[in-house]
Length: 99
Image 1 (cartoon, rainbow, N blue to C red):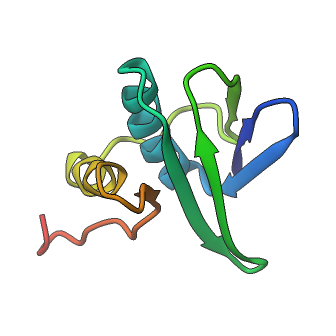
Image 2 (image 1 turned 120 degrees about the vertical axis):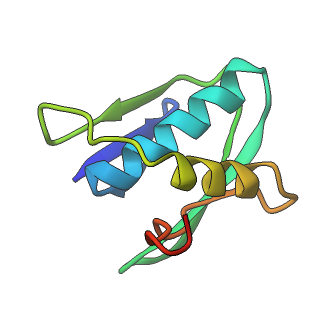
């Protein structure tokens, strides 16, 4: 399990390394362009949302020693949600048929 830790409040998103690595790519692309956006996800404790802004520090930590391989179709799907009015939503990885 990895984490995205956001700002001084200690707000954190906990995900498996594979989806977190894909979220990382999309978040960094958006922030690199100076864009603010919402990030939402679900887990066993409920639905969560945070507002990401380029001036707020964030930190990614992964439990594994290597970054999982990237699935371009999944990055594209995540980016589509990030560019929507609802913001970045962690969607399931597309299957081989969907790719």
